[in-house]
Amino acid sequence: MRIGILNSGGDCPGLNAVIHGVVGAAHELGWETVGFKDGFEGLLPPGDFRFLEPKDTIGILKMGGTILGSTNKGHFAAKVGAGDVAEVPAEIVAKAKSTMDHLKIGALVIVGGDGSLTTGLQLFKAGWPVIGIPKTIDNDLSATAMTFGFDSAVTTVVDALDRLHTTAESHKRVMVLEVMGRHAGWIALWGGIAGGANVILLPEMPFSLEKVAAFIKERDSKGHHFTLVVVAEGAKMPGGELVSNHKATAGEIRLGGIGEQVADALETLTGKETRATTLGHLQRGGAPTAFDRILGMRFGVKAVKLAEQGKFGHMVSYQAYHVGSVTIEEAVNKLHLVDPEGEVVHAAKAVGICLGD
Image 1 (cartoon, rainbow, N blue to C red):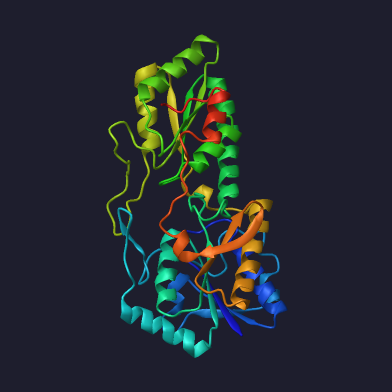
Image 2 (cartoon, rainbow, N blue to C red):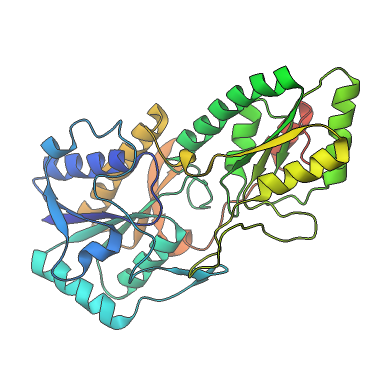
């Protein structure tokens, strides 16, 4: 048996832990592992790949990024804008399949987010022996309670808020921190709560800048002369528009810039000096947390077990502290969003955090 693995889409802390898990579990079964470079593009003839043995994964658990590389562009790009998904052309699928056949790949582990797994589902329906592993720092796939990379991203947000807290308090400023989260505000919500934010603005909850400004003024009146604001990049300014300061390109719109807009508006409404910081790709980089290293490794091992059982078309899933599986078809295009009436939101409000609603 020879098993293939590729990473597709954005990078994410814990990808190397997944590779470590796949290679180790495959080796225990006497299987060979082939790592395809730069996502699905590595499948195109003549093929861009490397054979992986346990010795090749020594020390990679602590490394960010991926030793195989990844891409969200190229011939297999699934996202074509505004949430639309494109099918990979039949001739591209056929070329990639020829590489699979030439290498005698008996199972292909695809580590990716919603778009990459949608491509994986297309390949499975075309007869490919596909196993999926969910990858997104946004934690926005409904078929799994947690994705690796999320904990690391939240930890980065908490570290940034800890640092912003001291300078905000020293200068009596409002500090706005923009974090990732296109559709789901989990990073903003969890990071904001853990980092001591006073205001958290989410894609799932329309907010009023006037209400946020009133909250800041009330804090001032009580002797709290600084405020920390966390806003997800996918939160919509009043009026319902997404914010992007990037030029239009193929694929989904690149978000970014809402932090600056919120900061400018709050400075005008409150009269307080306000500064904005955007974390951006700092949330994707660096060493994964212990949780993400373990979860990624467990996902990799489970993927090999699914291949051993012939459960192709399935995706690894984490529920109730147990790593199991669901079908890829169940998993894709069903987002796990923050519930505005959910327990975590109510907990945030109970400790005095303003969500702008």
